[in-house]
Structures are given as structure tokens and as C-alpha cells.
Image 1 (tube, helix red, strand yellow):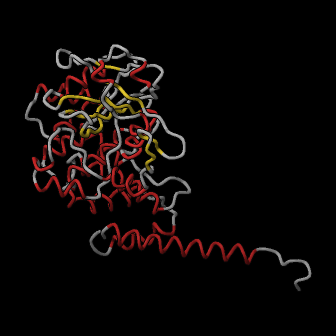
Image 2 (image 1 turned 90 degrees about the vertical axis):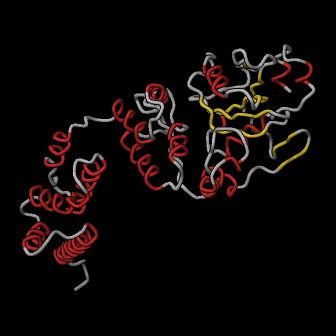
Amino acid sequence: MEAEQKNPEIGSEMDDMTMIEHCEVYEWAVYEKINPRQAFAVDRVHRDKPLDLVDKNVESYDKLPGSYRLADKTSRKKGCLTLLYRAPRDVFDNTGPYTIFPEGAFPDGCPVVYSKRCRSETEKGGVKVEAPTPMAVSEGVERMKIRESGPLTNYSPQTVVVAKTKYPKLKVFSGMAPVPEGEQEFEEWQEAAIQMIEECPCSEREKKIRLTENLLPPASRVVKMFCKAHPDASVRDCLRALEDVYGTCDNPHTWLHMFQSLKQREGEDISAFIKRLEDALWKLVSKNIITIAEVNEKRRNQLMYGMLGGHPVATELRIMYRHGSPPALSELMSKVKEQEAELRYLSHSAKAKALPPLPGSQ
């Protein structure tokens, strides 16, 4: 193979053995829903050696800093694994490295194979194989990726269920500024992480793996340092460590002041104003500044304070709130949208009547 031709120092024993091919790395990257140009594989990694050694060695190369391990599978070499990595930028076969040597563990080295798209159908060893179907790609995105090697029987039955459960994958977060293309701001990423922690039916350990495998440096280093100092840290502890570094000011008084400063803008529908209030209320609840039982009351108070006085819907809402307890969000939005739709209809009808008649229509 091309990688081996560029690296004659790889032993003859390795030359005689089949390793993962460029096309297979490309397919694997598509299967894992990552940009194939940022993917590369490290082959022939012995199962009995710590994978952290490989990770550290990969990051030490000038061309591969910030790369992180995404998935693994059984290598064609007996007793070995093939690891798939994602680099933070495009990597190419003509730049190398082509072999890595994790410190003190693998005297023969581990070949590095880069992703290449083959013409028409994927060709492996002279045999044409169909590219993965969209269904296969979809299943690849949804499945749970457990980094540790070993058979699935080593995990709990709950893990097996999670591996087959359709659950949205967390996006990657690096903490870099400006935010790289394809990543999210921390607050948005944090919401998805909280949803995963609260709703994913898996163990604490598996949630922690799921969280950390979607971090890139420097954010990943924040969590690694935190976990070294706190070996028993939970997944929520790790998320709080990230929030301390990348989150906004967490003073409860500051968040309450920001919420109480929200007002309806000129020309803004009240339904749009309510949506802004909900976003702020969610932040207050998620940070344990207010309880879920306080939400309706807080929404009512801020709505009454923040609505523009002359808005027709505002008048109706003030009358409604004066007679009874605050309604839930669904009931409130239903009434507001109904009144806004009626106002738009009346406005449209009034404009139509005000138009002059067309010539010859009389």
C-alpha cells in the first residue's frame, strides 16, 4: 500500500499483512457521521496495551495536534484493534505521519492510514464493495460508541439497549474562540448535554464516556485535569467544571436581574416576547435559581411588567390574569396566537377595504 511504500522502515512482517485501506477509512468516517477529510485510522494496536498511550502519541505529532479517538473495531491482525481518529482540520496522506510509536509499548509501530474516496464503488483488495446505505449511516450516528475494547457481553444489558436506542448524538465542543464551524456556543451545547444526562437510559459511567468523547482541546483538557484531581467525579461534576470555564456569570442575582430586565420590543408580537421569556426561565430552572413550580408565576409577573401598554393583546392578558391563577404555557400561547391571528385578519381586511377601486370595475 502507498503508506507502506513511503515507510520502508515498517517491518517485512507488517508488509505481508493486510491492514485497513484508505477506502475503508473513508467509509468508516461516513458511517460515524464525520468529515472524511478529517479522519484517519491507527491500525494494529494491541488489545492488551493502554489506548491512552496511543492517544498521547497521536497528539504529539505536529500534523495531528488536537486529534481525538472516536471509535474502534477489531483489526485484521489477530489480537489488535483499529482506531478511528478525528482531526480538528483536514489531514492528507501526502503529509504523514505514516507510523506512530507509542512510548515503550509497540516496538513495531502502528501504521497510520488516511481517508481516501475511491472511484465509483469502493475497492478493497480488488473486490468492489457497495458504499454504506443511508440507513447504515443513520444507524451509525445513533449507536452508542463505547471506547473501551472487549466484547459487548462485558457491559450491562442496559448498555446493549442504549446501543440500539435512537438518541441524538452530542455535537463536538472545543471551547475555542471564535467558535469553529460546525460547533455550538457553550450554552447551546450544555443544554443538549443536560438533556442527554437526564434522559439517556444508561449508566453514570456510560454518560461520562458519552460526554467526554465529544470534547476537543482545550475543553477536553479542562475535564481531564478536573478528573485527575477528582477521580470520583460524576458526569454532572464534569459539566459543571466546563461551565466554570466556558459558562457565563453564574451569580443568581445576575441571572434574575437579566430576566427581570426583559421587555417587549417595539413591533414584536407578544408570542415572540413569551418565547424569549421561556428561554430565560429555562436558564433559571436549569441553574436551580428557581423551581419549576415558580415558572408560571414568574412568567406572569414579567409578562405584565414587560408588555407594551398599548398592545391590544396585552389588554386581554391583563384582564385574564386579573381573574384567576396564571395559566400554563400551552394555554397562554394558544390564546395569544389566536388573538394575534384575529388582529392580522382584521388589519388585512381593513387595508383591503381602503384600497381604491380598479379602473372599469364600476
